[in-house]
Length: 387
Picture 1 (cartoon, one colour):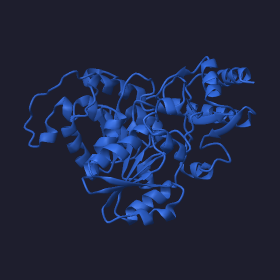
Picture 2 (tube, rainbow, N blue to C red):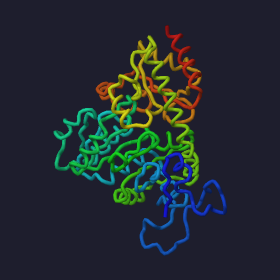
Picture 3 (tube, rainbow, N blue to C red):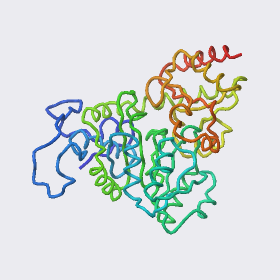
Picture 4 (cartoon, helix red, strand yellow):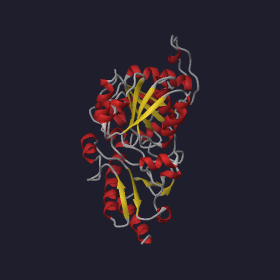
């Protein structure tokens, strides 16, 4: 029987670990074997095989991830998009309809608007701040509502309590991408969501050295997702499992530092005369601030902002920074900076980006674990060059 640990810091270290330790190894060994001896399993999904995501490395991660969000089950995947696409395709078939938040990660937006549409699965976008408008978009064939805990790249926080309640009242599967918040700041199952998704490449791993994903949630739904995943083949390599397993153990100390640092940086930017706008859910006066304070235990390490000026101004500022690396992705120990229109949202049409408020001048900052004072000094010297 799995042990229960009261605090998430302890669950990060001890949940899912093998008992007894394998030959006394304190760290989970890497089981670099594609196949395992047949042990009389009667179900295809139970045969021990690397593509079925059920090697010892996978199983330890599944138990740990489920424990982190106080959920019933979890599975890791080859990438965050593998988690998203597999989970959605498990429950939607041609003729079905999906409600989804209007501001999403660019890859998710494209999958919903292009790939699902090509499969005969329709969708409607909903305003996360306007629950009263959602009922008008329901159809008899609506099966799911999809959200992001903190939206990429505008850092919006929808009325998440209303989402979970709306889904239950209307028999919909509620699915939420919890990557930006991480289980440290928000645990969807505790708030009534059926399924939580993660790009584990980001905060869960935290070191910018693997690509992985996860789906966490209700056991009955997870069983169907695992079956679909086994056929689609989005399995995670055991060495990547090992790195993710190792990275997760420092999530609490990393995330809490990044929460604090991103808040201080957003407050600094908000007061600076060269800055036009800052997007950060922990910044007092932001549209979702009150909601974020009620829901979250921290506001995350991601923020975005716009300088006074044009695209050239934004690019000069980015190039003038010394510490942040100009790169896509996020959630690592190093600070990363980018304009989303050139990376995460490059696949969206300019018209769609404009409708959502994702401007060409928007800068996204993933705050790492460098000294906050050094990051602020670096921002200051880059802003001085723009005067």
